Length: 79
Image 1: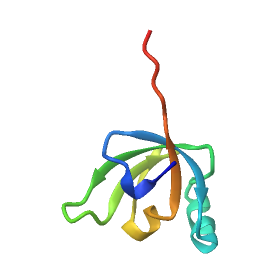
Image 2: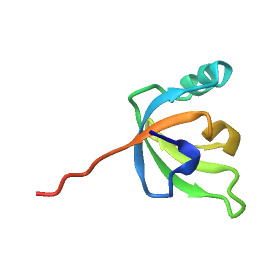
Image 3: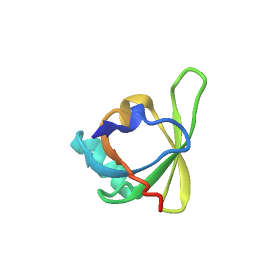
């Protein structure tokens, strides 16, 4: 597993866990539910904040918030 802060733009991942309980409640209200797919859209030039798409909308996260979100990259199988 990786941290959301380590994911490069254009990559889709699955949320596995949010380590910070207070942050978990805040993010859960915005659609960050374990098992939900999210895509990293953009990273600001200095690395903070990052823009992600989740549950059909875009939002920005601070780097320290993204660092608390554990994700798993999707494995794409080709035929």
